[in-house]
Amino acid sequence: MSDASPAPPEQAGAAARFLVVNDMPMLVLGMGDTDGDRELWRRLGVAGLTGIPGFYGFNFPRGAQVGFTLTFEHMRLEDDQAKGLLQIPRSSVDADWLLTAKRMKGTMLAVGLDLDLDPDSSDKEVCDLLDARAKEATASNVYDHDIRAAIVGVAEPREGLPLFF
Image 1 (cartoon, rainbow, N blue to C red):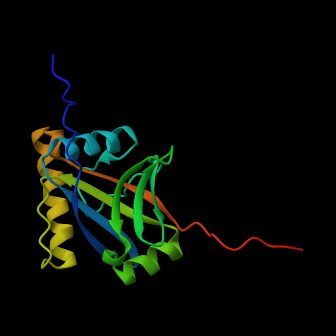
Image 2 (image 1 turned 135 degrees about the vertical axis):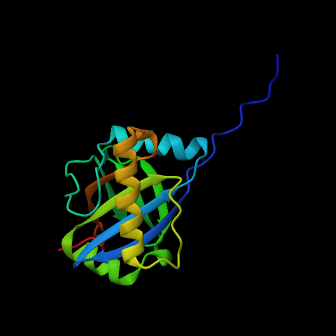
């Protein structure tokens, strides 16, 4: 019998693209294909992110049990029990997206496994990629690589000094 503990599971990672589409904030996450990515993918499905049949002409569903919490250092994707699913350094968050998401108190969130998000792609090219990928998954009934999406909240808890009277 070995005293060695099992290796920790691989952490999920994602490439993030911050877009503002028709004055609406949208965050697109392109995840890899590690065990950690697949576990995050599963947890997002359980939390209510659902496959969409396409991007253009379709509304993102509401009611997912995840949302983003902004801290001084990070933007954390959390489930309804405040368990952190993913965090993005706040310094990496696009300023225009952040202002729009805070004003609207939410964002469109689209997530795909093996979704190659080229940082040099235009916003339109990213939307075209989402549309093509979603339609391809719907047509082929291969839902392990569909685009999961939802409208999710974005909150920045106010922490201040206590008031003394």
